[in-house]
Length: 423
Image (tube, one colour):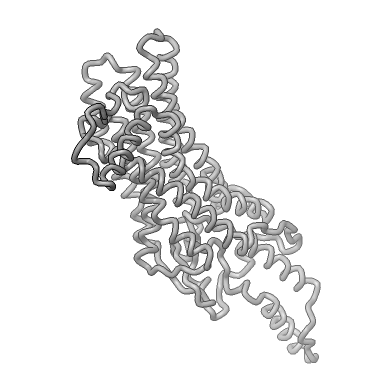
């Protein structure tokens, strides 16, 4: 994932200015001094280098123009980026290429290891349960873990790309990685919204005669229409814009490539779409549902409510985990969108801080996919029981001791009224 845009005008800025001074001196009939740089040139060179460091490129929306990869010397030029040449910014970009080549691969490796282990266990445990033993909450969590498991499988590609600053997996894989990212993001947050709706129906509308049928409809039908289908449709731009292209230095970049004349607008629109559809709308659903649930539980009697309260606390923990991970990234891309739309004034200091913010917030957002299984293990007594049973059966199967079972060995799981898995 090449996060930084290096245009051709920045490759050799000093040479460009020297050539301009040479032309001026020759036009005056004077012998040019090939090594002379005027104070104005120094300021422009300094500003160009600072401006190069300040270009913010988040992974989700890369603003890459085809001209940036040409070797002809043509390009956007520093004047189009709105940095004041008279007062060059003194903020250094601390997220250097070397740091990214070490920091990102290590973080991705940690997330991959935890995510593949935790989500794989969830998928195995819930997937191996008999259908009659699988609660509606389990079905939602199976959806969520499957999406996260698919996501972490793409991280090794990004780790290699970050370490080498070169995409070596082909155009088809490039498109696939972008699609997986988008589907996982929107699918995960929309599934969490469905979980909150299910909790609302189970706790607040438990006595309604049609609640059971509505919950079944949400879990078995509407989750596909309301979560997976929108997530798939929102990934269509990845199929259109994501591709690979070779840079001037021979390395390959895997990014979204937008039309040159409207690239900033495309990036801003997709950033705001992510914030609106991925955070704001589902967030409102979560807040309303859980505010009503908390109000109902605090007013109701303690008897018979403890199991529901524990289930609600677990689900709230899952939701908070998601937003703690994703909100910093959402805030960062919101500011980036406002900068691109020129709603906020551009400054090198702000863009340098924003680039560091996104470089840290993006892996933090990715980390949400390996935290959900930890919440299941710590808060879910029923899930832990099912996990122990699945591991026991797996070990017994590997040792080929399953044909005969001890008379006292019970492998029954907790019932649907488990504090975490039922409503």
